[in-house]
Image (cartoon, rainbow, N blue to C red; front, side, top):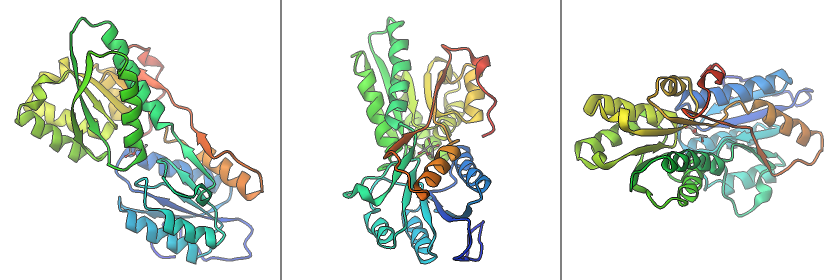
Length: 309
Ligand code: GYE
């Protein structure tokens, strides 16, 4: 199989099972930590891993899955870029008798038998945790309105839709909090920087009190734009971010970011556990959530474990 970092010659009688892993991309340190965690834990358990990077392109991921099917892997792990559009290729995997485990973002499908389980965060809970930080903040504030700019991740990605839903549900308890502006940053730092720069230039950013950003990369981009065009604004702005990359935690410690909702990339152990249990014939739950927490200026920042991503 060409292009795999872990390419091997397929020996059908080999004892260790072969797992094909289609990752959506390499857009953030979070994503790289997620990839490393899965590959490291699989290899620890002697699985042979075929890794493919989808370069943020669903068509490429579909082709990668087809390669895995042609190669007759024992199991496929898919970290899907977007929610929909997987039915055809997953039906091909099913017809070939190859089980599929979804990791990170969820998929939407008409046939839930097309995958064994989903292993990843509860994105809705992450959105609620972000909203909870803000409604607690609001309860201590005497402002009559709190205007939020929501910087969203990629459209049609579960981590975007559910982080949005969970947040809205939670802030709805306090009608002073309103999302007055929504921008799309696709989870990419440069895109976050561009859209915030435009909002600063056209003046729409002036009325914003809170930045709720769906990931750290976009938050870092937004902060670059603020530094360039409105250096004082970031002091008064409440900034809520998601992931927990090292750079964001450092800015939380400096008092620039107020809250970082953790999204846990260290899912490898959970994924391998699901793979092994499935391959040994055990039934596994359809949804496996990984543990996550929240870091904020309301907590003890010295307790945050050292970040390696
Ligand atoms: O938050 C972000 C990455 O889907 C959980 O994707 C993932 C998100 C993560 O681009 O950094």
